[in-house]
Image 1 (spheres, rainbow, N blue to C red):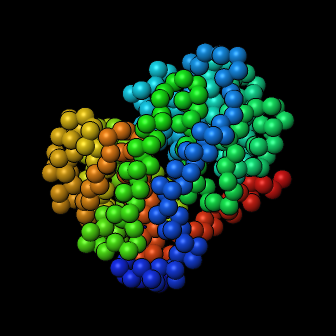
Image 2 (tube, helix red, strand yellow):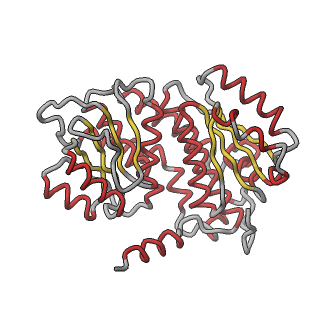
Image 3 (cartoon, one colour):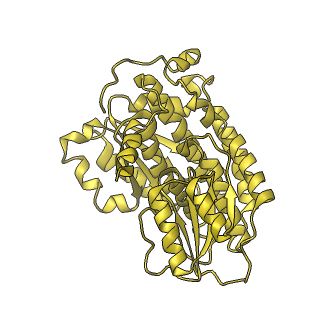
Length: 361
């Protein structure tokens, strides 16, 4: 992990956070549960009608990139054992060949101007897929309106990666309206659990009793490697991308049990492993064999080979609550790490520059 040009404040000096976090991204993350609750209410109250014709749904695809895509990954993992049909995420320009009339394609772009997502929208139209949109505006909203297609309207002015609650809630409502899952009780529980989790990790909670701050400090000076298991696979991915965008550090993500078939072999054999900082997301309701695998991996691979090993246990009864409780700890940890490094977590200059270059003829 590269060193910041200027070290940030101590994590218990929360009154000084504004010197680094100039747009108060931390405050947005702390309000995750409030945003999720309002987004859920809006999705329920303002859901467009998209069951006209009663067409059979053979599969569900979330078409989107970045912050829009990770919401789809979280929902797909959380509902993995409840959905009667496959659900996946496509981050590209074209849909897979199985996409057809019976495929429900949820085209999700917070800005409404994401190049790849607009291409996926046109591909879904050509294939005759059922289409539902989720956006705050832009070209996507205009195209959906022109085609007379249903759209969930999101509030504007939020950074896409911080808009996860607003992007995720409509996805759950889509599954409910399509009669593929009963998401309401899971969402209600998720709001309550995430509220408790965020409060326990907020800026005013001292480091000694704050899991997110403890993890951020453990990651200083190294490269985060985040492991998930089962339904927390996408939560680990979210942790990695939040470290990329917020803390501006390289990071990796992996998943159990797959990591035991390849990754485990490199830890003791590669001296660079000592520069890694391991985070393991634990699911208390996950498969018991994965729990055994994690303990053995800590002893066989990580002991003496990794700079540090932190563990974060998901909370809640339902899969969605457990996934989002892990997500919010990671979101907070990524901002705390940015603050410690003296790096403003909000700007994403390289992404902005790339988009400008791509827009040139």
